[in-house]
Amino acid sequence: MGDLMTPTAVSVRPGTPFKEIARVLDEYDITAVVVADDQDRPLGVVSEADLLRRHTSGGGGNTARELMTSPAVVAEPGWQAVRAARTMEEHRVKRLPVVDGEGRLVGVISRSDLVRLFLRRDRAIQEEILEDVIVRTLGLPPSALTVEVAEGRVTLSGTVAAKSLIPVAVRWCGRVDGVVDVVNRLAFERDDPDDPDDPDDPDDPDGPDGPDGPDDPGAPPGGHRA
Image 1: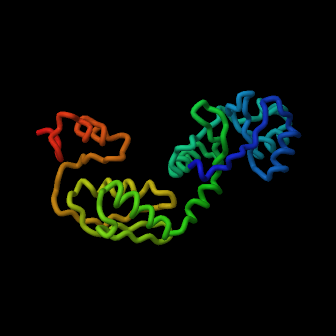
Image 2: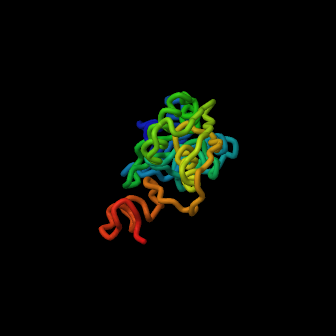
């Protein structure tokens, strides 16, 4: 998601007055601005709606600290676009401040940024799935499965060796930027347990460095422990 965000985030300090906030929104043609402390850590967000509410009600404060919606709902550069979209929907916000590992503001991701992502060309999506999912993750030749992409909708067809590879393929295709849906038309040659080792899944304890992975000195070559 780091490639999607606006890297130069506009922000104001907690003591910034009403009129200055309005000027910033107008100057940068934005609908909301992050309120950050002296260490650039987001505290909240002031939107056009907050300013209009203050103007029509005649109360509610006159500085960013008094006007902002807080605490700030933030994202991280490593997030998948889908996670950012879900967070916006859950909290009913149109943009998220993006923070680094120390909580400092490094950018902003907006709904319009996410919309542009889903305009990604189908051919680029198909190539990424073939290279990163089919070849690198599943270890199959690129011709092993058929990958069709139309308007961000991916259709997978063909036959895999084990049934348990199907959810892995579908899950990783869904993580590719620009994918809006995955249609599964895969068949399998043999049934097997539903919990395969997903070599690139950080939640899989039996990945490449897990107890049954290749780094286990007690495992026989080419296989798991008996």
